[in-house]
Image (tube, rainbow, N blue to C red; front, side, top):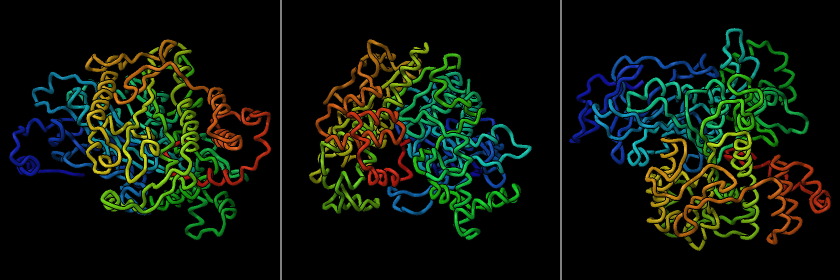
Length: 621
């Protein structure tokens, strides 16, 4: 744990000749005193604050415990280690590992209030949960200083255990002295709940209002927000929720602890299959079949010791190797305590359960982020010139050269993205409204004014892809050299849309509805209703900000597909097969399409491509 003994020496190092009074960076919290730093855009930040004890050794696969007290003034000037994960292409160390199991830390941003100012403040608090498929990602990626300084809110970014360190169930982990939280297997969800408890206990010392906390997150972070929304033990710890491109389904506790059937189909990696992979890897057994026999014959205490002795690298490799067919994103379990037995979606259809104001949204072309890397759709190769040389410094050696069939590419992304929106926004919004909950707001992010780069139309290639809205909510990212060269064409319109979106998000945090934004001069964003269902977020170069009354249903997806001239009948069948395989559409819809014609086709090659998708695709199917 980071400590300082002499405040004066420390302040001299971090502030140089700055004018900030050292008392303005000191805060008293339940753990003791800590000192932060001046941050961007006239904000203060306190980084790397432990909100739980390190989940190491006997605390691995346990509910988080309250953090220990500081034995001196805590140095909150630097981010803590990220949670243990596999490196990716953007780190320049693909195939390696980053982070630590000791990663339960959070970061607090406030306006640059003096110590005296804090006493009179009661600002809304927004807790950000990062995305990354619940297998990758970290809190330090996000700089919320713009929304903090411009709208006088406090933002807390948090970290949580991921992969099978974060969500993992096996009988050996449920001992006689195990709590209901320990038994749940939902350790990542419990980490986020512990972070909320820390906020409730401490945020008033930063000028925040403990009775006005908004949780928000994108993709897997959006799923984690939905899990908190549905968690009985998280009730009262937050007061508003924003789910950005989130998945609202859960993982079955039965799937989590059962060997895969002969078909290899399961909704999530099974802990028993993970252990089989561990045994196969270290030579304990010679086959997966032998692993089953061995595992079933082992004493539970011995099996627990075997499992706990494994390194995080070994555990995550086995988790990846054990991925089943139809395996979804790492998600919370319906354990019956942390998440109700009925699952996450029960909260959206059961008006007897508590709810808070909620905002749900997706981007227009979510799946382009994933499909742009598919060589069946896009040709990739070495680029030339300044941009190619710049990207190579970040480990990016290939660039998109050609979209092989633009109409086909746009069509398949439309239906997959529409299906995402139907599941993540339109159906839950309808269900909330139909069961009497009116504080339900929705959006679709449509911005796609990207430039042509080396002859490639990035607007068509990426468009309003998954996670693109994050650049507008955390605009520090707009200064990135890759973003400036590949994303930004008209800086003025981008900045304006970013300001508008932050204004809406901040107003939602203040009042529980985005309304006309904090500025009170934006087009009014109303709750989902027959008069207007969701806000389209786009720049003034295109649609601008406009409420739309269109909505997506499973039947509208099929109806639009039937009339689409961009696809052949065979391609329509393939699109339906993919959506049905992912359980986005019912089997009878596929069976009856075009008088049963689709049933006559061979989908073996398509099935291979579906089942070989990357494990870190931050989507459900």
